[in-house]
Length: 283
Image (cartoon, rainbow, N blue to C red):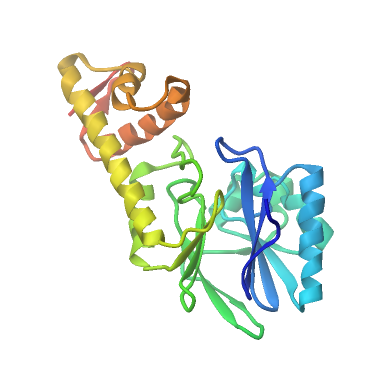
């Protein structure tokens, strides 16, 4: 693994080991800016990886660059595991969406000094000035944000998509209906480069956003078919997993069950499914 990885004169990638969902093993942090630099994803909880992150961030000064803040795309542990240590050691404020801040532990939330909301602009001065637009993109997490730099067509996508593994939409934090709406919004940007939290940069992001939408639509169709086949007798989650995820290895069914619940919640919202306390039925 090469790190840091220079992607352009204004953009570096630094993957750090995190307790994330396999097959991913790392979360990507990014340095945005040619002089003023925004560090994205204070993710790792591991001491050795935090030291490596700090060395990387401090070395920016040798390039005439300086970190001005840290941004967390959302509150999940593999994205904020190093927030307190990195913010303290670098004496940097943390920026996040208010819903992310509300979901952080109080000692972590105390570091957040700027609330990011949809439409905000983050202006980074330097030889190559950049303005990153904040996009509030819930669905995977309530306070999830992406950052879009229109001039270069670059979008930091956090956990909206990945180039290794997939994205879990889990009940509670996640909302499948909203997630799909936000994927369509990202697709409409026509971005030329997407920077995910897991895996390599994505050169044709609109195609990947569309692929995710189509795949989730395919899965929803299988869920609907399973409900229709069960008819009035209804189906349990376990029964539905076995049918709707019959193309998924059995050892992944516990995770599939979470995704299934997200699909069922979406269908219930739309009036296409109902839950009576024990079983799901088409409606």
